[in-house]
Image (cartoon, rainbow, N blue to C red; front, top):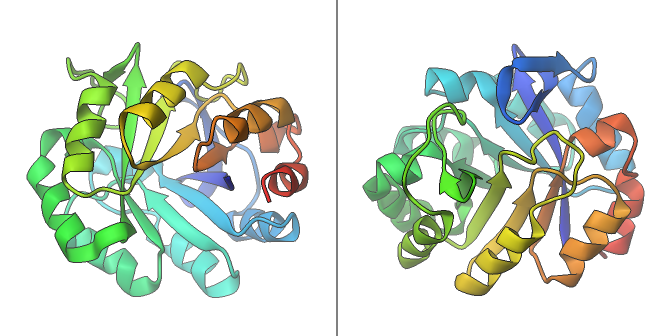
Length: 237
C-alpha cells in the first residue's frame, strides 16, 4: 500500500481543515517545500497536494508551490483542487505531475472525465468526497443526491483507474477512516482505491493495508505526531 503524506495549501502555505470547513483552516508548517523534503527524509515516494484556493476559485492557484516540490524533490506528486479543464490537466502533466485528481467535475461534467481519460490515461484520478454516503462538490460546500458507489461505477466505466475516497465527516478528525465504505467501494469496482480522511495512527494504516487498499492519505496525523510517516511507509513496503 502506498502512503501519501498530504500538503493542503492556502496562499502557498501548508494548512489543515476540520471536516472540510474552510473557516477552520490553520497553518501546520512553515513552508510547502520544507514539508515535502521532510517527507522524503521519512521515506515517502509520493505526496498528495491539494490546492484549496483552487477548489474555491475553480482554477489552479497554488501551482508555483507544486512546481517547487517537483523541481527540488524526487517525490511523485498527485494534485487536486481547481482542476476543471483539459488545459489544466495538460499544464500539470507538462510539468511532470504523475497524477491529476478531478473532483467536482466528475459529478458535474462527466464528459470531461471521459475525454481526459482518453487523452491522459492513468494520469487522471477521480476524487470522490462524500458525506453520509452522498457525493459533495465545490470544496465540499455543496451536497448531491448521488451515492458514492454510483459515481464510482460511472467513473470505472470511463476507464478511470484510481479513485480517492474521502468521508468528509472523518477528515481532519483523527477518529479513524470509514473502513466500511472503503471496503464496500473496493469490492464494488476494479479501480485502485485510496483512503482519505480520519487516519490517526499506525493501527489505521495496518487495517487499510490488510483490506487490500491501494493507498492511504495521511495529513493531520503526521502534523500532530499521532502517526510516524517513516513507520507507516515501512509497514506498507
